[in-house]
Length: 66
Image (cartoon, rainbow, N blue to C red; front, side):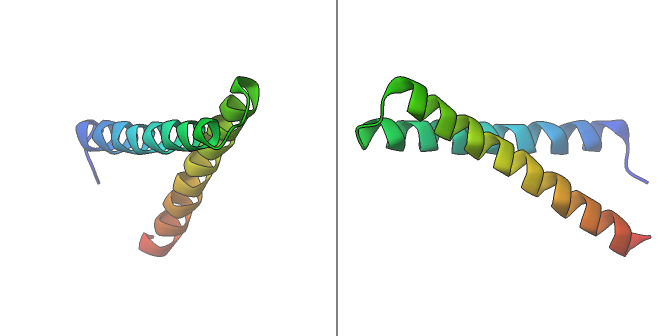
């Protein structure tokens, strides 16, 4: 239904949003006084949560549209 360019654009957009959320979480953790390893873990957790949420929404939308 959608071309490869649209899928690639959507994938890149989701990755950029997830990376921005991870950077924000890591920065806020560091400003809150967390150590560097703790801030990186919070950033990684936020990135994984954003990607998981995007996959869940994609799966839900795919099942509705078919």
